[in-house]
Image (cartoon, rainbow, N blue to C red):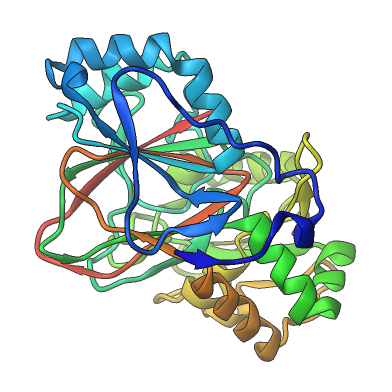
Length: 346
């Protein structure tokens, strides 16, 4: 485990007494590389014999313990359940419904990733090619509309690579304040604006290749213009019918209800990863006043995120719950077949 810092050093409200999920059915286990933040991050649980009997038993267990699960999720930021008899996207959908949380629809979201729905709640995580790395981000933090939680299910583990890296955003902010305080101050005071060029039709070669029609849930340019105006975006139409859109100023740092401050944004992913036939990564994000970000500051933040990263190497059947406000995630490149399904919770 990596020892990040002590509770005394942090001296902020997020170091609470972590709930140890001692409930019949799962056993907490350790994996190499976990981060020490008063307790291990992420929290990892292996199914015991009781939960190996079938998906209905699993769904009943999640339903019975959902409040404890959700409370621990808000404390730890990420929970991994391994060894459950979850064998299909239908099984995964049943588990999701057992949590009793409102669905955050991909179809109605402003996500710029190409995904395909399996059910109204379950969809593929990202259709970008396997060699494309998806860098750390909070889901949809580059938009005014975002989910509170994510749930992943590994339908097929990759042959090589394909881990989902996780990083606690409060820990990253704490370390960034120490190393690049002026950068953090500017982020906090000025906020960020994101610019993305959306194609007229889906671009499967890009990690942000969702078409503007799908992204905005519209059919015509007039409808797109009305939707963007309502969201206070600036936009322009390009000659190939693609749409260049720039967000209003969005916060780069947020305070959670329990007092924790988090680096809640899309900064790393946009600066490093929004690179395709239409977009230039280092011009995809700027401060709220239009000033460019420093390469040196970004190198520091990216380095901190990797130092604090836990790479979740998937096993088929795994289910992971992620608190979107507290934890950033990404996707490492991979070889072979990999299918990780996702769901968003409002």
